[in-house]
Length: 308
Image (tube, rainbow, N blue to C red; front, side, top):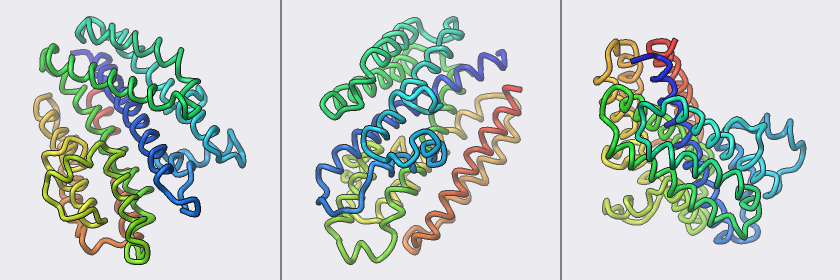
């Protein structure tokens, strides 16, 4: 298998997952702000913090941190390399150059999503059409994932698809925890428990995890239980622990995996060693920062091993 092909399918999966996760995040925040009291310390700029783009956003929009500016940056701004439109365009381009590898239906779906997003994304900046756009985009991304799972040979190319998807999921999960949950790892849960519960529920909904979390039998929604679930739950596909486990399975299916495996094993051990119950706000932030740096390092190891 050519390294160029492996890199293209890897990035196609990452861009699709990034577009889907950003869509879920926007929808979740839109609904959260409807539930929050007017004096709640919740702003649209939190979404910019989640994607780690504070400096770039301020360079482009200066002091504008209103809803419309944030939505433009995350949805339609071609200057933002992680905006939804840019991610979909990049995913389609990677699908185009690997048309002999991926199923024909995936290429058709990539084209449909490309044209739909470019025609309708500007309308999603306003709230009136936002939910319809985000829902349509998520369904398209899930359709493509389902087609590849059911109609693509589970060879090396498919393993790189799964590596890219799970690496992106793990990164987004850690970012949502860092920003949305980090502000609650203090006495605020005791001071304003109703507010804290709504915020923790939003963290779960941002990852489409609320229903699965409730099915696990947790009593109520609180910080330590939510973090334990999103860190360590091995059966929920968007938890950090599950994503790392899936990457390990995929790496074992491709050759020359020693260097990626060593890095991945260190990440898994660090995640297993976290004492969630005693984790405070500063400790959570330090751990998540370290985890995100490890995600970047694992990507670099994978790229050095297979793509360069």
